Image (cartoon, rainbow, N blue to C red):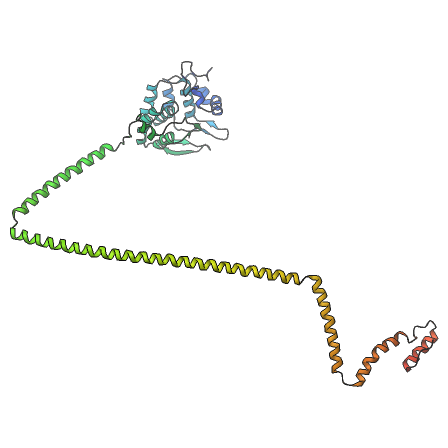
Length: 372
């Protein structure tokens, strides 16, 4: 029963006023000790005393996300729905700043767009300090105008999603809201009036001074002054004509210079493109040449070629030796070498009979034929 909305309260934005607070935050507020002990049985009159005891603002804090007393009182105001005059008095209260913030927050949740701007815009001129409890439980210092700006320009404050409102310039364009009036506008008007008075007095003094000068002038001096003024005027006109002619000439030269610069840039760009294409063609030819050489130097062919080259080198070496050898003894020895090798194989030393093998060995040393 203690958590139900007042039956006489009307719906706000088409729903129960307490539904403006999210369900999770609302359930935590209902379980909080401050709600159970301090907010039970509060009315619009007794709510003022609890609001005067506030010393900070904030949403939830700590690991379990406990709600602050400020949030509990906001929920209580949504539950009992006080009159609009009481909320306006909360906002106009200049003695207790937290009471003013409480009324402004409640009006932002439940008020219309025009009421929100009409009653919260003047609070931009309040620069008093406020304590705000952050999510980690630590306190941070803020100011009244910062809190009001957060309520008017953001969609989320003190862990509550604020209802959407129209932009101020939209309401001003429609005509439902007057233009914002600055608190310094009166001072600006006073300054403008002082400046206008000073200009008037200075103008009167200048006129008096000119009258005094006119009284002391002579006609001859005036004619001389006019003649000099005309000569200066003609000289300035000739100077302007020469300046215009020089300017046109310089501008034409500048155009020609820009045109030549563009032409050189295009030519350089064309040459750079040609060099790039030529480099690409060279790289492509080099890759094809390397591929051809790699294909030509495959393992099987290189092995066979190396073998043929070795045989060819051996034959050339043998022919060279044959040509360079001039002594017959050397030729004879080279011819007899294969025969000796054959005789070694058939000298009879490997005969099964050891006596015959010994005799063949002896005969071989003498140079005789082996026994069979």
